[in-house]
Image 1 (cartoon, rainbow, N blue to C red):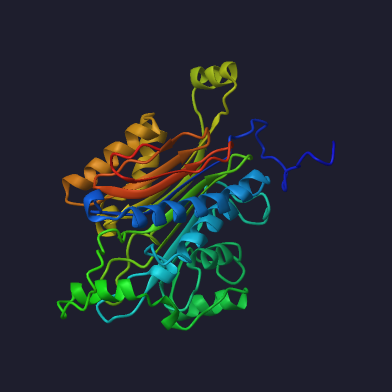
Image 2: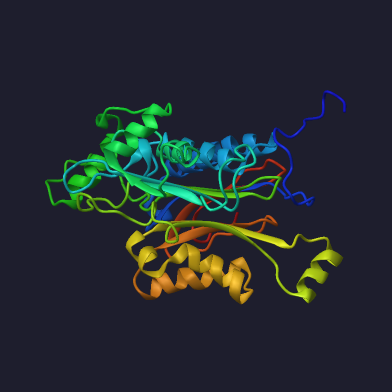
Length: 361
């Protein structure tokens, strides 16, 4: 092979069908509107989304893992104070930051064959010192010897992560003036705002779902939670099946399997979901796993399943949206509010982003 041709970093999957690597992201949802935002604000959010997409794409384009691509994308959003995660996390009623995150894979990563298929993912909540929560979730997921559970919180989880090389910071790192003003205004304190519109600041979470060439899908989600949430409140972001999900299964039935063979499709189906919005409603409706199970058991398309789930949230008063990706590279990004920061990048390397409901990717 000529030196100019790139070889995959990892071997291909057990399937000989190459998947079209794809990355889809969200940066929160809410009631943002075009009339209350400036061109400069809109441009800044598009730039932030593109930077996240490009970071994840670099991993996938080099033949890397879906897990690493999703974490790379989310880490960029965590470092960007415009988004409600990491540096831009919102404050709770006590004026503190309590961060949450999660990771879930449709199959164990090829780079870590010792991870059992039953170890589906990992959730973390009540983090107060973790600079990049998504990286912490990845580290603990890959370390079943020291973190054999599926869900951990607080000081002890962060201490384990630090022993694995994760970076902890002083809680003051998470402070941003805009989020502090948002907190004070929500608590009814005198408005010390300088008149800068805060309507563009997203609520909800940030997240990424990546598909690598081996057909593995990984969903990674990260958030500061709800503005002025009660101390100790846990949302959907770290709670498996509600704000995130990933799984794969084999197609059953002679006709379906024969048709797949004729059309060159894999008998393995996989899906990844990450949600953003009012997490209490996502929890009540198990939104993420419901989408996957509608595809798996009812045979619905990801577009139909996700649209139904998002509409069901709205019926109960839940605001938000989801990003969904399957192992054929199909993407859907439904929302039931005025806007959701979102983007997708495919093998051609062109990042496509959108903010408002009527934006077209």
